[in-house]
Length: 421
Image 1 (tube, rainbow, N blue to C red):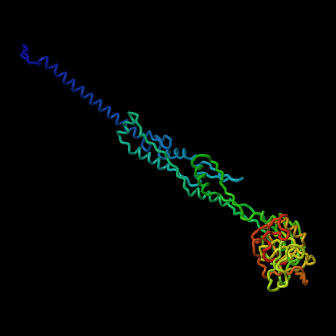
Image 2 (image 1 turned 180 degrees about the horizontal axis):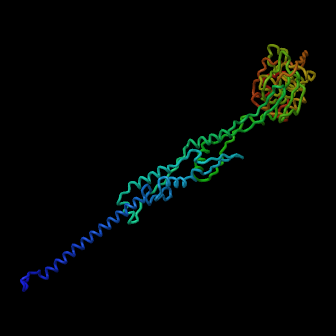
Image 3 (image 1 turned 90 degrees about the vertical axis):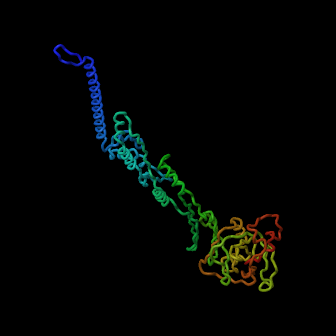
């Protein structure tokens, strides 16, 4: 300190200056703190204001299925996401077959999206953001970085029901060709193929079309063939007992008719449906009962005049019954045989030449019988005991070769079992 003349005491000049600088430092610090406080308050206010702006809304940086839902309410976000998914749910799929088309969409078959769950997840993610998260978003430009892709569920049951409905309208069973003789004459019903939708292949194709790829599906259908086709009845023989005529149907219509002799009342020609099992060229007759009624007859009669079977024999699937030639042409038109169907030799040759083994035979009663009994007729063999034996019964259709032995037109036919009349 210094002493003034008037004895006043004052501060030293250096000390005054030091006090001024201290105040300045305090003041500056206070001002900085005040500014920081004001800035922090402003930032906080701005952050709170930012939070208020997004109250009830999804924070920035939220994308669902490629749709930016930032700033949207949950309702608006759901509407936007559903709109983006709608084309997939309403994708038109067409299944085609012949001139028919069945149309559907994934939505009709029960497909659903989880868009609502995806939006709820975005709302929850926004709700979990802290004050500091929002501050960084407000001041540093950061965002929520939420990504979600909604999925679509395609229930199998919908596809199964859709395909089953198609199959029920397409599937048909094959129909066998058939013949009917209830009127005494032949009528024929043609065969038809069936159809069956290949279920597994169709389901797979429809499921793929619902999701992606071609929207048009060609229906896979299998053709079902009938077991009996119309070809089985290209030729059918009809024997009308009583009328005593034989008719040949070809392609559903009568093409030829012959007068025949059928069985006497005691030896009726069997009725029903049969087939031609064998064609015999110049058959040999073998005595079927040499110890009883055939005791006075030769053991066999070779082909030629006097042979009870004539020049051809055509065996039925009925035991010991056949079409065969005869020299007893006076018996034609009557019930005169012992069960077989006699024909004039020229007629049986014609029949032999135009039919095949396997040709159906229908035998039925048509009118009253016309019995004819003639003693010593050259047709002595009754049906009873006429059971064919030997290789000739297994030979199927016989050839007409000129190189066969003249006395045995059937090769092993000499051992052929007995013929009928």
